[in-house]
Image: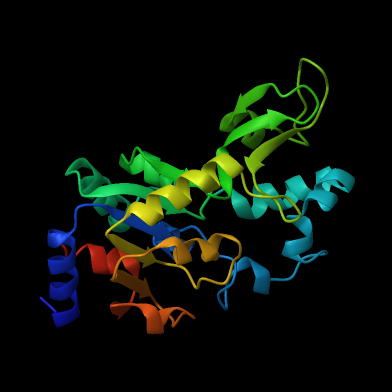
Length: 240
């Protein structure tokens, strides 16, 4: 076992309250594209910049255009949990992992079996009518041939995700702060730590065992006890 992997295993073995904070890199190994890499969604060409399409004001003004992008780029059918999701679910079952705090919206942590998943940016698996609040499952939106509308009131049904210009859910945010502040080990994986306010949550971590696993450097590398450059799934697949 590589020296850094051995060290990570030792830290995990000695910890009692681990929290995992993850980003898009956790899901790319499941075939879900990220946003900010060279080949990510933000570096592809559309009639509008993806940041604009994924904003609340754009959704309100051009819902048809929003849903064209949504079906083309946000829905990845057949995506399955990878080694990272599966390892974290096992770690939780063993009583080591107390929470997964994720910036992802794909629901793959829950699909792998994780129970305490705090989705900072919401989820594509839940949807609601903007007019009456009626809830709908993912299939209702994903199978609609055009902009989905509520059969009860005619309002537009939207995914329960946090769009640009919207604030994070305060209950989820508060729970994430509590879990991170109580952790004796924080593992950050698959994120460049460039998205705020989510990335700012790591400043609530007070214990020394901070581990960063990412393919590229992050602004917080100098603060970490251990930094591993690599894919999160490949790293976790070497752990027991």
